[in-house]
Image 1: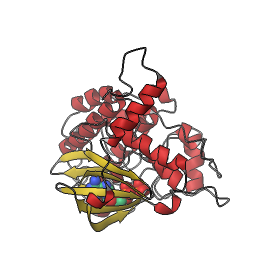
Image 2: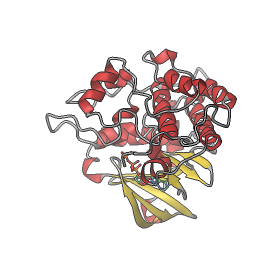
Image 3: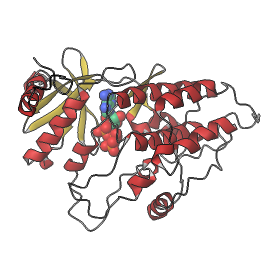
Image 4: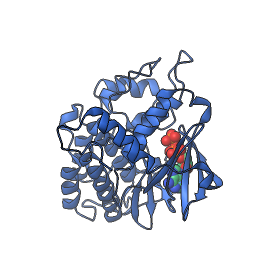
Length: 323
Ligand code: ATP
């Protein structure tokens, strides 16, 4: 099989390359009936996630069927699958294949055994010490740096999509945002539907492009830079144990971020270097945000212990996190 995209032969026509993509996608096709579907793990915008068995334990992400009604959705789904199959990194969930025959569309990945960072931070209110916090952030940077090096934008990096498995970070859901958007019929009402906890991950340039009626063709301008902004928010959550913009109504968050105002650091007791990373990730200008390779260096240089530690505040000043 000729591999797609990476074919350097200039004589290779576009048609050849399209057919080789379909050919190579077929190699990842899993007949739905081969899956032994188990219990529902959870529901998201994308659809329902089941645990299951396919040559071992897997997670099966099934697309919501009520929205898979056109060729465009199917094509978007296949495009995401072709992105997924290019990823091999220990901090990224293992893509195993996909069911690509309508009406059953699903993505099959390894089953993450641990809990998400969201659950650790916002539900269980777990406190990580500084060296663990840095280790987690380093692994996220490694996985994200790899994705960007492969030309993949995550588009939805958030603590709900980061698992912690015996200390190892596993990032999920990269590149699925387009499918989610297509599945989510946002054109019906005259309002903007905002999933809870989503706004604080949106960079100013993405925020400024939110529309009450989002047309299918004008997708939000997610880039590697907007992924770095998301990382800033994750870094804040790790350090503070809560969301940035806590307590602000959505309208105020949209207005403030869109105008270039950064979230308050009132809840963050940390050294200058720690705050600098945050501020750099949240830069208004996308090109002023650091790349993940630079971030990794900055994180490695951070002192593993807090410098100006107050005995009554081991790491977090406040733990009154929203759940
Ligand atoms: P949103 O749709 O807003 O992104 P979400 O991240 O909770 O929200 P999903 O990604 O669809 O939605 O996940 C639904 C549930 O399935 C979540 O509880 C998530 O932690 C879990 N889940 C997703 N992928 C896996 C996986 N590979 N292994 C184990 N659990 C998973």
